[in-house]
Image (cartoon, rainbow, N blue to C red; front, side, top):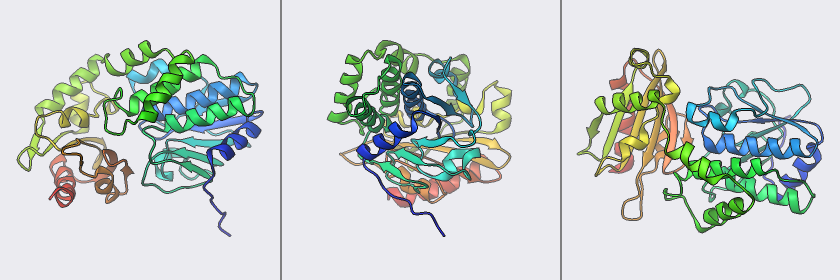
Amino acid sequence: MTEKISAVTESRAAEILAAASGGDVDIATHVSPDADTLGCALALAALINENGGHARVVLTDTVPEYLKFLTDGAPTGMELRPGSFRLAVDVAAPRQLGALAGEKFDLMIDHHGTGEPFCDNVVDAGAAACGEIVFRIIKLLRDTFGMRVPVSAATYLYAAISGDTGSFRFANTTADTHRAAAELHEMGADTVTVAHRLHAVKTLRELRAERLALSNMKLLFDGKLVATSASSKELAENGILPVDFAEADLMRSVSGALVGVSLRESSEGEWRVSTRSNVTGGRSVDCAAVCARFGGGGHRGAAGCTVYANSAEAALAAVADAFSEEMF
């Protein structure tokens, strides 16, 4: 018999988390972790641990260098503990859990408009970041259940929101986003460190990745789609880790571009694809719809997927064909 999956309110989610917070809580992030998934997980872990629980963040993928300032010293692990309460944050579908895809979870919190709920869930596609939803739930845990919110949780959530809005530059940013950021600032979030580390610091590997991305850049459809790629051999030859090559934002910064695409070979014949679209005339190309064709997903303006092809050219051709149908 298939277990029923239900959408729950934020109030109900807070009630569930309050009840679970006295024991072991494992909080999972998605593969290729970003500031949003890490910030949400770390904030909830910090709050639960502050109030006597035993929470940790479960990581099954490498944390990018620029985000390690968040995870340094935080309680993390690589496996779920037997009997723990299992929570997934900023995860839209089981496949985004990586090695944990077959595990049973108790609750998921997400903000993607496309996805495949795999347990009881809180999903708000109108939220600019999952961090906004978690922020509201944490306020309920504070105001309704009397749980203490450590300053570190405010910093983590500010990082989550700042990361997914590109420092409040992306079109997903709303008035509610700014209000949440202001409240987190008032709660003591270290906004200066977050802004600097997320948006103003690059490692030498990341700079080498940008150089490689620019050297492999291709303009398609009269420059409306700008793409780059890197094979596993190119990454190794340039001393670049795969996690450092995610240059879709760099590609879409080219004047006239509607879409930026980045492809990196994660294993032979397997290409991780990152896509970003610009808002032009109040509209943008639907990256999520394109990536869904390859089993991926995300948001209209930012999505990812995996493409299987024998070469970068073949992988890009498949992605470009899919975008051509969406663009024209």
